[in-house]
Length: 317
Ligand code: ADE
Image (cartoon, rainbow, N blue to C red):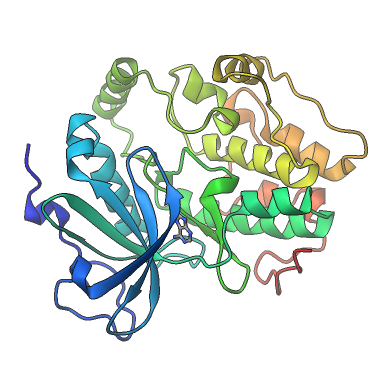
């Protein structure tokens, strides 16, 4: 298998141009590569600086040999497609500036979110105040509304994949497990069912994976609403709701909805989490709304918050 240039060419024509971006195809020589800022099973993300503009980017680097050996080409192409689909639709997603390749590697030039991961911040503060959790849960809802309205399910939403930009707004990253929903023809449904059976559908991270992703049932946007419930729980308690010594035991707990709230957990937040962590996907709050997620926005936890203008983010300290 070879990488076609036409498969892996993105420049200013297909993604949003920022002033100073050049139309000429970029190459690794256009950047100074700095420290590694993220590590995945098939990629490393580096902080890099464009030598012409001095702008900083996060460049995701993938080894071609490794991707081909593990047969992950589909995932790489899907991530690129998703990034192109969502490009420019919201500031809450990393933006794909361009892609290029050399003989050994593929490169995705992405927004650098300089304030790091939500996970790091939760761990640093032990837990968030109710105001912080409310604000960032609302930003995640806004991001999911845009994503789902474009027919994309993230499928691996978790505090490591939610970053903060320079103004402390969230930026969702890592669309490597994302799924693009097709129009609902019977043919597509059949194909999806076959491919799920073949691939043993688990994608994502044990602690945030929804029961339907574990059980080979239909994937749907509500899988990301499950993850939202897990993330809200974690912001307020410091830990993910489903914890155990192994992935297998975590899966057992998820399938039994076996989790507890720590003492003192905010009452309205508890109600919202309980309405998101529901085993049947279309019974989750928001699941039967079309976007925007009115029933989530209208939940008492978000009382007094204006989703059209969240205002400045709360100080994280
Ligand atoms: N780690 C992984 N991706 C990143 C990004 N786009 N910005 C900052 N840190 C990251």
